[in-house]
Image (cartoon, rainbow, N blue to C red; front, side, top):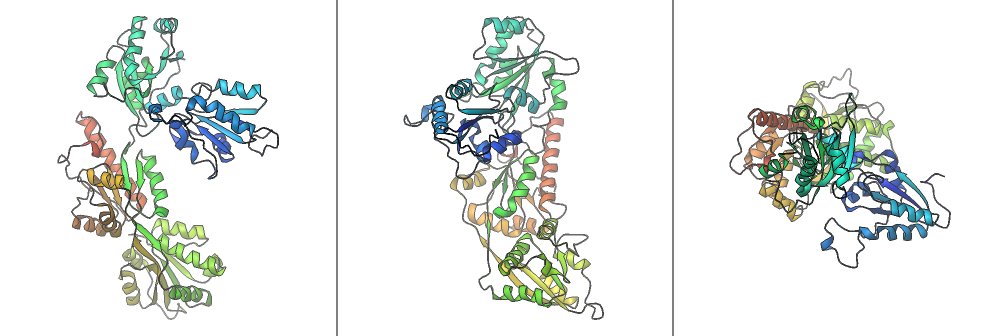
Length: 549
């Protein structure tokens, strides 16, 4: 039976699904497939946001407990009642996905729910997930086994008895202990009392596989002091779960070389991306790959021109052979022309016989996605000036038509128009779209911007600087300011901002790379000086020094 196909039986079916320890990228392909077909989604609160994005918009998500059960009204079912929720939905003929943190068999404690399904003859399946005890050490840079084949033991400190501790204490196996932050020292004490040497290496990881992950290296005998010195304990957050690894595999010298996740150049940085919503996605994905947590704040909204007749005439002119060239200076210009084409029932074939120019890698990609390969992309600087450097002068012998169609924003500069006219071309300078200031972000975001809650902000144009300051206020002076080019940097400085990072070329992806290089250099400098690696937002106001762009 295909578990994702519609079920025509009297009762539904249940998929017990492992959502992994926290990183959304650890969901399996089978898990994503099951989520896409679910009628009802019942998930552990810790992974609800991880799995919900893969479910249909109309999926039913019954009210569930948050991590703080004390704050839950009595009439809202807690996770102790999920078996009832699962069974009720299955009896109603629904396709139910029961998503748990980690793996259903090792972390999920859903065996009783499975038995309930079996007792009533409800079809169910299990989609394994990355168990926390396996995934977290991997992200902490602690391999559990090596070529020597060391034995590995998994233990839950909350349910371990004396016999369990004795067996672990008398062996040299690598021990993976699931516990809580405020109980990890007690677990270490149990192992020492059972026979493990106090100098046995130990790592403790909280929020594993997420950008909040933090790992401490200690020994069984020193872990309490290490956590106290790090000001982690005592803490009201002491009840958060941790994975502790005990054994030579977790030795500090080894982990220094293998800590691939927490050593990402922008690990844990909250980066503000003030762009249009449509343009932010690919940049945010790139920032995530560097370990950052992007926060998209639209500062510019794109709207159609107030008088569309000029754009309509120009698009018709493309079809009737009015133009020799069309020049696109932004993704939004490509989008505007494509939408007008679709409105008239046209496609990329209408560009036949017309030369196409594009400024910037993303603009060129947008054209290729439309089915158009640009004839001219600047060989140097990706800007209007760079395009003019490569643009051929009008030659009446070789150019049967002397006119260029330039679809652009209402606030675009005149550099390209003036340059083309100097080269002998006639230019139809057409407003293809308007850029207007977006609505202010939520109060919480505005406070984070002004109060130093963000580690960096990426400015991709002068208008994003003006608009962000206008709708949200000026970023705090501890926030790293990264600008896409000299003009944007000048605008930022005019608004009292100190520019830390400058993109080597006007590309949003090169800008993200430049910020990552800045983060890596900052991290290396801290390690070389023997200082702890901190994020800019963790620095004291006034301690920020000017960085080279």
